[in-house]
Image (cartoon, rainbow, N blue to C red; front, side, top):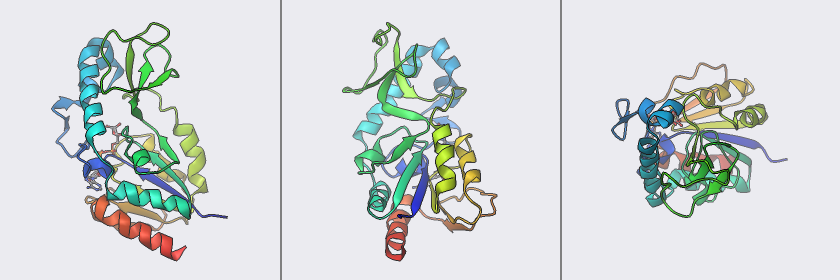
Length: 230
Ligand code: APR
């Protein structure tokens, strides 16, 4: 039976691919306050600003490449039962070759009906324009979970966490729940590796192995070690 590794990733794993994180930039995200572009109120108040903001982000994702950290993680799937639970909306894990990826906050390369969130459309162009409608006739929006919206995949993620034999946290400040709360569901004896240049506080009884390093440096070394010892 393969050991199960669960990797929780955040914006930091895509930082070296050129995609900005959320909290490294003194509260502004690409020049906007998050509440002006990533909430349902923002969408109600000024949908074209929100649409334009995510069109910019989507263009950045499409021109970004997976980095050594994404590629290293894809190698774990040969030897381990691997699940990546990511807060990121980019598709860099998938483009690096990872198959088992769960997106807690949505995927920016999909458009979503603004009437029925279950209606998703994989995009074949970089932007969604105002006036582009779903099959129900409602405006298409990015398939991104905004603040105040439910996190549909969280139940599935919570179900998986207690099964982990090894957990790796990469590139997340653990600032946002419910994602950050997933670590509390890991069995207490299970080791948790934390990879981040600024290690976030983790108050858990588990063995915490802190690797204060950028993901693209630390992850290939950690993956090599795990593949050699298991
Ligand atoms: N390698 C590893 N970690 C890095 C790197 C790097 N090269 N650069 C930055 N980091 C770390 C930062 O130190 C920080 O701890 O990545 C983390 C980024 O934290 P956030 O910007 O808060 O991103 P994240 O934790 O993913 O945010 C969670 O908040 O705004 C919402 O929905 C949004 O999914 C996002 C959620």
